[in-house]
Amino acid sequence: MTVIPDIIVNNGQRIPQLGFGTFKIPPRQTEAAVAQALQAGYRHIDTAEMYGNEAEVGQAISKSGLGRGEVFVTTKLSNDAHLPEDARRAFERSLKALGFDYVDLFLIHWPLPTRYNGDFVSTWRTLEEFYADGRARSIGVSIAEAAGKTPAQVVLRWHIERGDIVFPKSVTPARIKENIDIFDFELSGQDLEAITSLNRDQRTGPDPDKFDLV
Image (tube, rainbow, N blue to C red; front, side, top):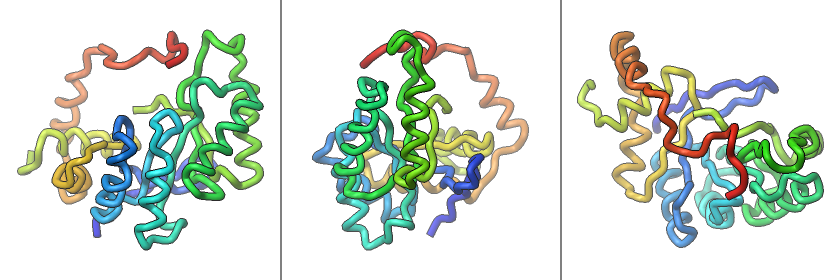
């Protein structure tokens, strides 16, 4: 079994640094993909209400034979649910869909500076309620992000050595296994610098400073 390193966050919670992402995996494919990921050794599964596949993630974990405490589950607040009452209802929906009485990490999917009069505080305080009653073990905001290995494995290893938490996504069993097979080599300092130097500050997704509602 691959040993995946943990990161300790500021509340002392340990988070597996490499997880399995489910973004854009259709619900009909999600249960099988997550089951394959768990068999491959992933112990951190990332989903969101907006992905529409929380129920299938929960089903795969429940059928896996693993205890609930053996799998770290992250899900996220929908973009249209930042007002406190909306956030409470959305969180309840996520728990119900997953079939769990708690999630390990609940995130604000996107901060939305042009909505709710810029009132981030009330949304965050609502998440603090979930943390206080134990239904969310941690809370936060989502905006992070050669040696005979594939380019994808090298890039994933670069993220790991930077200290990032990474969620590669695939529905192809061979790629699911390939993406977790990155803990038997290290990049040299020169390799790390070479990959870092590829940055061109060109965003491929929405800008969080300008993002509104999807």
